[in-house]
Length: 355
Image 1 (cartoon, one colour):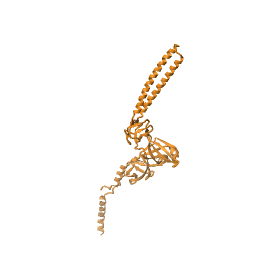
Image 2 (image 1 turned 180 degrees about the vertical axis):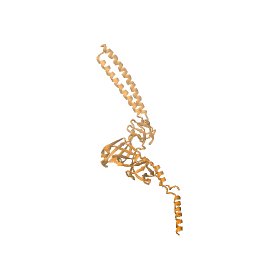
Image 3 (image 1 turned 135 degrees about the horizontal axis):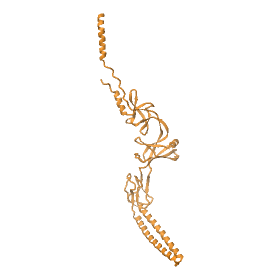
Image 4 (image 1 turned 120 degrees about the vertical axis):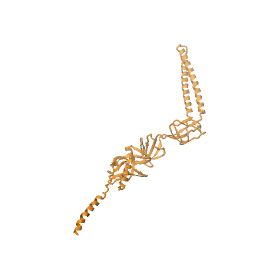
């Protein structure tokens, strides 16, 4: 028995060594690829409060008749775009043109009378120098000359007035814009002062906002505001005007934000969000390019010990190419700047090892 044990011991040990030599090694842990990252730190950013405002056009007017007549032409209808200087209303000008011709005839008569009076004055003056006429005749010729000159100036003013009356029969747009209302129709007779058409310009806009009196001190102190556009962009107000009195019913102040000349997609009558600076606060800001959006949900890939993990965020206002994080991240955490690369790295970590 002892002989068998002495023979089987070395054989069993050799078998274990052979089996252990042929066993496969455990797979090595996958290394997380290097990703461009950002360590979050609070930054000083403007603290704002947002109120609703209404967009209105700075240039809006109602054109009225400055002379009488019958409406002969209305080239543009409501909601049509009208270029600057285009004819929007044309009257009949029979009476005005007749008055212009009468003024021209009166000017010709006054010119002739002035020429005759000037010649007569020169003759009397020459004779008076020779002591052949009395002083009274020279004074009479001088008065006739001065009266003729005054009548000539009056005739010239009348011709200008008659020309203006003819020009008043053609109403032109003072600036380019949209025709919003027609107060007359073809064939109607109008009188001076009667409204004809109304319009507004889309080139210069402003926003009117009602602000509670409790916030007016901070708003006045910082004197800075922006309009939040539908695409998330911000449009800084070119000028802010605060009305010096409050509404006695609502106890709120009216503030007017004048917008710069830019293509914003805003139109008069729209409601917008206006953000007013009321102080400075510490905020966490992340680049817009680092966000992952799924419908109305936004998130970022947070880098940790187990690789990138997608985390949902609650976002605040946008500041240029960055956005404020209200909830979901903490100071000192690292996020991936390239969400596509982080997604591929996460997928690689989750794949099973090859045999």
